[in-house]
Image (tube, rainbow, N blue to C red; front, side, top):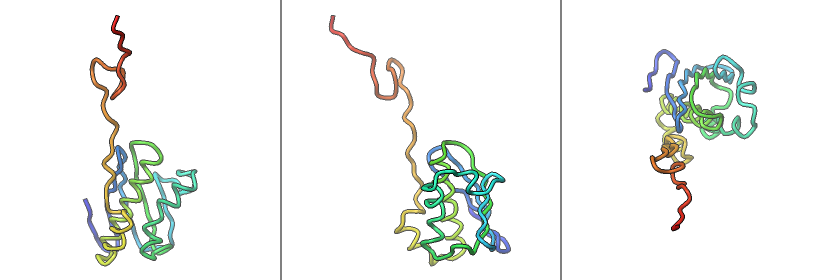
Length: 133
């Protein structure tokens, strides 16, 4: 889902089981995640720098305000989902950003999921201990 109205870019980003709904508008570079500032929601510095990489790659740092609603998964998955949504919003903004974002790998959804536990086994791949006698 990606829509563009009067300078409002609405997209969805996903990673594993996390889903992030993005509303991007022109502004001063304020990023709000679940009604909290970015620094308050994501405490690890690596997640914050990874999240704003699409802006750095397309040279749009500080040009947009981003309002994010994210749920599901853990903090790393949520940060990846937000990054995916921001990259999609930047693609809506200008289609010339496609080549830059694609080579950086920001437009690809990370499809990896947890493998399900199978019956007759201890876990997804772990078996119960086997004894011949």
